[in-house]
Image (cartoon, rainbow, N blue to C red; front, side, top):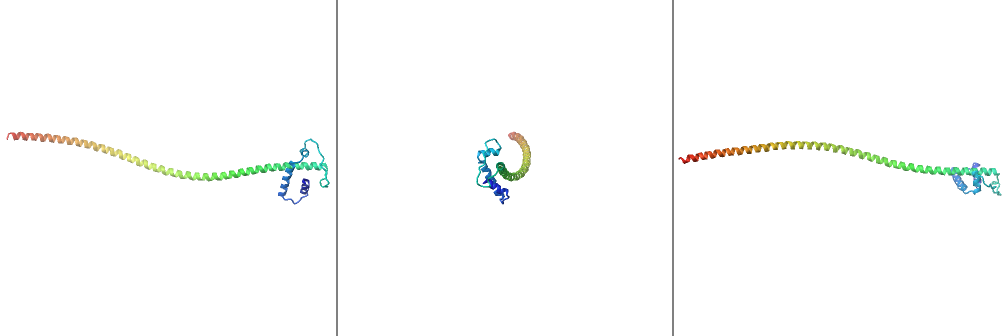
Length: 193
């Protein structure tokens, strides 16, 4: 059957590319199942060579060199299909990896934009907080200066109050002494009268 398909293909049949690929895939699978003596012959290793089975079909009656060429062609086709399968598998893996990386890149880009926006917002808030803290520091310094000033004024007022109290006590004492002397003098003067 493979011989007919290959002969049809050689004659320039109207097989589409998809049909050609399917044919090649089937040939590769079938070639893997070829009987061992054919495989040995196809691989060019020494071993017993069995003559091809002769059938009544005139299309299959070919000389041995054609059979060898057919086996070599099958082997080459099988190898090409195997290689194609490996490359296709690798391409699928790479394509899948590329899609995952693109998706991750898009996610990372979105996250980067979010983080950049958040950074800008936090930088603005930090700037506002710094200005607020500078204002509070100035206010605190002003309150501290005012407290120091009021403390000095209070100390001065307390000193003045102590001085005034002491002076008042001295005045009261002197007045009491004077009044006492005047009272004593009046008492003395009233005794003689």
